[in-house]
Image (cartoon, rainbow, N blue to C red; front, side):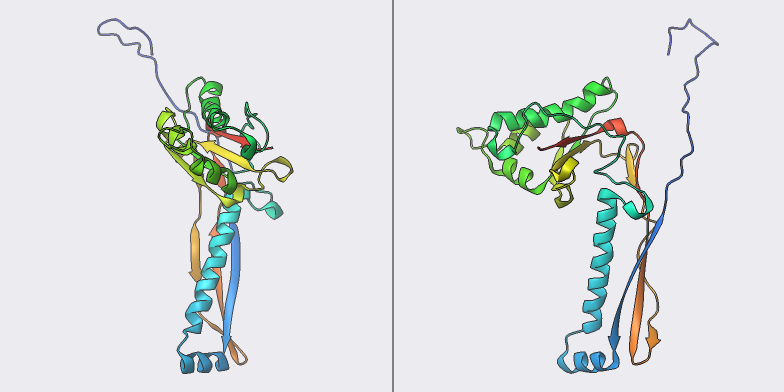
Length: 239
């Protein structure tokens, strides 16, 4: 944009450039089965065996989708939300195990990580979400920051941070850092920044008779976590 005169006809054009990238879509499958005798026994005792097995199959697919979303599928060369090579790894001002840090030091770490994205991108990007490993989340959610009010480090952080609106926990981060240490992920939760494409979440194929049993194949089509703006994200390892 520039300063123009009245009735100007030389307005500068604003545009967006795009570049084509290819991302993989992975097929994942499993199956469950029951025999004729299984059906007879389940009908006799009324335990809905086929429904239980179907639920277990669905849960196994959901877990695999969660794993691929976190770390990708190394066997086919994809990464996920917690290990993208283009996302900066930030060194926190207070290193070491968080259980040994004071409440003030923990709050400083959280604010520093969120601010790092704003500083690096010259205020172009601002994070709104932070995900912590299980133990670190539990610590800041229970450790009082103020002895007077009893407000926790987590509640204080959410109150004073100009950026972060949500802090969550995720067990996939417990060993996601370099050398298997815990890792924190901070990012702007916006489809403009990143997306996780799952074309087919879960589908069951018709039962297939095999001798005296029936097998039910289940299938999913899983994409990758696409980082459109990796500098709108940041990692921090808790070493």
